[in-house]
Figure: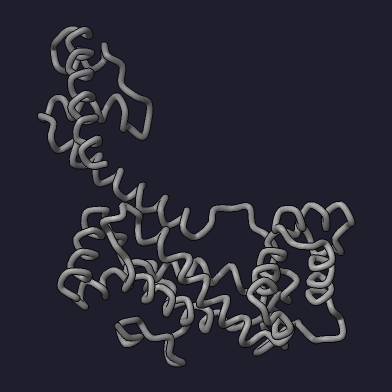
Length: 283
């Protein structure tokens, strides 16, 4: 598996075009992901590997976006993350019951972390594994760019299971003014400095991708469940539950079909029960 499998981030195509292209690639259903994973593991099918990688490129973009505060080119962050994604795909075992997105995010972050540590000169002082872990964790735990208070130092030290002196020392490195850590603007672009990278309480990339996959599967399952109904039952369910405007009442539907409201209620209940069975089977 090589980088030749991936859409190129070349000078002739803008980063925005690349991001639009990967976001347009359809997400995989659970069944399709398992099938591709098995083909790759059992038959070393590179076409299966390619489909797995391409369908998760949007995850790499989402992860890379969280590291733009280091002043490094987003395209480079994405390329490094893509390497991590390919490593994850090669090691992916669908038999474990874990979605590829949840498994791959750790590999993607690892490659991006290594790239940052190699290229951001302030971080070169963080040479040990413990220092690197503290560096990234401290940035995510800080609530603001202000200097930590003694109470915050104590809390973070306990949370990360490190000495308070280590937390204070790493914060000094993060806020050191004797080293230029702000990127030089290029072509008038105003990029945030590394200190601007703070914890984000919004959904993480894995959660976003997983939610999109669940929503896609639910939409697909709903369509299948509706298709399993007869025409009258489908009309009743759509009018009662899926109408964009006001839902129709039992009596309105009873007048439409020339039956009693109780009969409409019975048809609705039976249809809903049948749909639940289809949705449960999909899950």
